[in-house]
View (tube, rainbow, N blue to C red):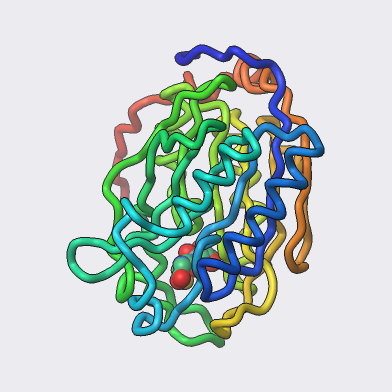
Length: 283
Ligand SMILES: O=C(O)CNC(=O)[C@H](CS)NC(=O)CCC(=O)C(=O)O
């Protein structure tokens, strides 16, 4: 495995949120969770997609969304991380992109408040779900174009967001680069959550032999949406270590033994056993 693992166990705090259209409100919620996480001895706080701001109305959203360099939510998380000596994966927050749209962007912050890296959601959710209105995330958001692997004391971590979950090659690439943990912060719809969420998360964990940490939005939001919740942590063997249900905000603390990653990959070396598939067409 590439990448040096220096710590055996990770105590992680996963937050389920029901984010509002106000940066300040969401920052206050994160500060409360950080306090609770630190007093329980957690080292990392994982937040859901659009933790910083959930507003599907682009007009009012645009009034408060700034460039990533001076975004209030990212700065707020950096301060909270330093105050509580916690790693924070901030889920994501909309920041301004060059073309007037937003980037759905996550940030990983260390316990000194330093921002290690940012990931902009690559796959945007443009979907037609039976019984619902068409969803066109790409009308408000521009896509990112790069995977991001962050070196940590628990090994390398792969960053992704929500609908990315449906693209297994991204996670396979992270795992082959040595990732021990994959973040999938989300805001799943209720119908697709019910149908696909758990099985996709468990499949990604089993295929990669990595921990999957999927903090999620859950509940009825100020902007009118409803999200599936069920924030979940899955271990490298595909076992669900936490499922926060279809409820509102709360925090869950879980210990992750990092040795399980190497163990799963030793037991079933499917990551190493891939082959080129020369496809024969027959008729
Ligand atoms: O719109 C925003 O403000 C932030 N973006 C989201 O909440 C996005 C687009 S609507 N949600 C998803 O990607 C859910 C994917 C999903 O539910 C699935 O893959 O089934």
